[in-house]
Amino acid sequence: MASRNDSTVPEKLADEIARLESELAECRTSVQSLAFAQERMSGILTVAPDGIVTIDEMGCIVFVNPAIVEIFGFEAEMLVGQSMNMLIPAPYDQEHDGYLENYRRTQKRNILGQSREVMARRRDGTSFPIELSVSEIFEGPKRLFTGTIRDISVRREAEARMREDRDRLRQIFDSAVDGIIAIDESGTILDVNPAVERIFGFSSGELLGRGVTLLMPPPFRDEHASYVGRYLETGEKRIIGIGREVHGRRRNGEIFPLFLAVSEGYLEHRRVFTAFLRDLERLRDTEERARRAEQLAELSTISAGIAHDVGTPMTTILGYAELLQKTAANEKNRQRAGHIVDQVRRVKDLLRTLLDIARPRDATPEPVSLADVLDHSLEFFREKLKGRGIGVEKVFSPVPNIIANRDRLEQVFLNLIVNAIDAMHSGGELTVQLLCATPELIEIRLIDTGVGIEADTLARIFEPFYTTKERGKGTGLGLMVSQRIVHDHGGKITATSDLGVGTRIIIQLPIEKTLRTRSSMPRRA
Image 1 (cartoon, rainbow, N blue to C red):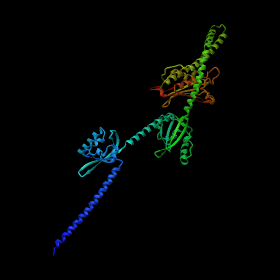
Image 2 (tube, helix red, strand yellow; image 1 turned 180 degrees about the vertical axis):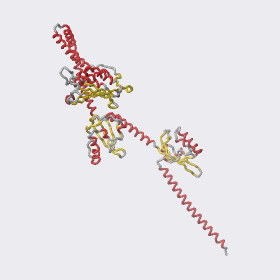
Image 3 (tube, helix red, strand yellow; image 1 turned 90 degrees about the horizontal axis):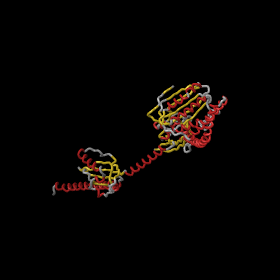
Image 4 (spheres, one colour; image 1 turned 45 degrees about the vertical axis):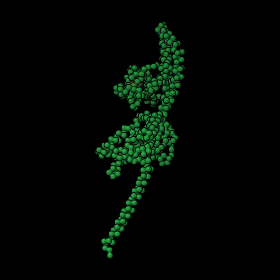
């Protein structure tokens, strides 16, 4: 009979075999799972749009995925086993070697786990931008680095085109002659072009973030919010896509006509209204200047002929009349000769004025103190003003000297002072003001307390040969010549008047033609 120990040996052997078979089955399952995982990972690496490259501690490539082949143009076999530097252009390849050496020595991670933009090199030698992120992995004790690479050259080209388009649009925006204002639904100003600054007198810094109603006079200012609200609620359009004439308000408070057209769009899901503005006052002023230039051209032609044909006989008549005035035996005849002399001299003065219009004298512009010119002009009429009982108040603020023709400006001021004196038959007050109306304009104001001018007459005072003075006391050319001189200096002259109250003449001259380093001293007399 067999012993018990002999019977247990086969049992133990069977258990061991079963255990081994079980472990083998588990190993097979693990191997199969690993194979599936490797296949899955290989599939992922194969279809990944980003390039993936693995290098060892010495910078040698041990793996690349198909995207690397497509991005760089190298076959995989040409890369594996080679230095990573073949994908890096100079001088960045030297930096890469230095970084690996530094990391091996110090273990400091400067780029691991971070994404950054660097330059790479294709097989054909061209450099291009990539986005690179690097991670560290281990195969047992072996350290490896895996880089994920994204070719961003197309994105950079698109961004460059967008910048070019944006810059081109900005240039168009900034160089537009018409004003352009962008606002949001609440009426807050988002952007303005330089033309808006010129038209309204505000700087962009004073406008951005402010309500657009700052540029509107009443009642348009009060109506704006309700109009926008009604449009947002009902879609009813009154200006959008249509355009109409409205009124604007400049920084100095002046109300002026402008043409307004508004378009609607969206910027980053936000509704934006864009207003296009044209200053009708300046447009009409330009048209008026053109009309007057045509009149002056016709007048110049006529004047030159008249001055030539009439001037010579007038000189002869004046000579004989002066001779008679001195030699006539009869006192009455001498007086008659004196009247002839006075009238002929008046005709010659008129001819001289006509010649000035026909052939304006050339003069070299020079630095001119407007305060000095005004003082000199007032001093010229000091006795006449005093004799008429006219008081003079001068209010001169500091203003820059301008580059101008002093004699021609003095001609303007003398003419305006004469007109003011003639308007104050029984005395009165003449106020002369000099100030900087805006950062761009110097303003000269002559305000009298005379009889005033009717509205219909006021509209014609700058026309040639139009005068309100008695016959023989005015040629109707003084204000026209004054306007021409002011326009020649790049300025503007306007007049307002109230019957029984007086007349206000305003001359505006641009500061852009001034010497800012020298200025008139403030005074008040």
